[in-house]
Image 1: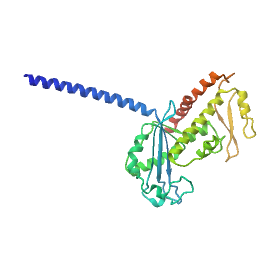
Image 2: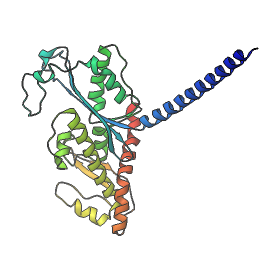
Image 3: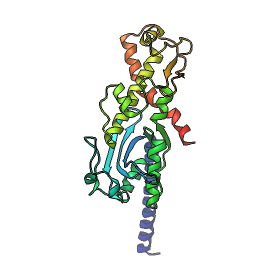
Image 4: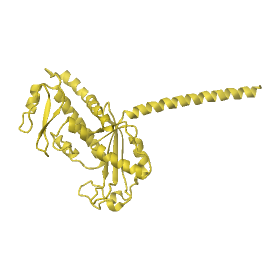
Length: 295
């Protein structure tokens, strides 16, 4: 074997070693990225047409989403786009809402197929969150992806705030519509635009989780004062159950919040520590119930 052959063999070995290192690095970073994205929460919302006749379908007019870090509940990424339906005649020429979506607004917007890749990438492999998404938004997405012959994105878990808040927060705010909950906490009017609505949804969840956390932590004597109203019966110290009135049946039902030991006295330091725990406890409580929705 001459010197040239030795040089070629040496170079080939170096190339193979380099390729092996690159492959291992790619696999490691890919796995790390997958783990990172699977723990991210994406709040999303769809705005659609409203069928007026039997047999009419829903057309997606807008998609909006924000990706949230569950540890800090901070917004990491956002995406929003208007979507032009195949049948423009199904979109109203005017809207009763100030920011409503009209036929003129979506006339030059991309069709769903044009934005399907972006929607897939922001949703797939993450925890999905939204208000009534299980029964409405997820169904509309599945229909839209099926129509273009593409697989629909799949979540690793799901948090439907309608179900979670109905169970945990009860109907103390009235019905469980997002507009009603936002009004209860003084968060303003619901705009019925995707990106605005998902941000409002996150704020509603923060407020509800904070109220529930405080209720489980403060002394029972103070809790009794909070609920000493004609419309709501005070809770028992032993069961900590919150009565709520179902407006449709006019019957009283109770939602168990679990039994917690009362805090004898809350100092400035302990209150600070308590509020620091609100975010992490809130999201853990929500995730606990999300997996059941996927079964």
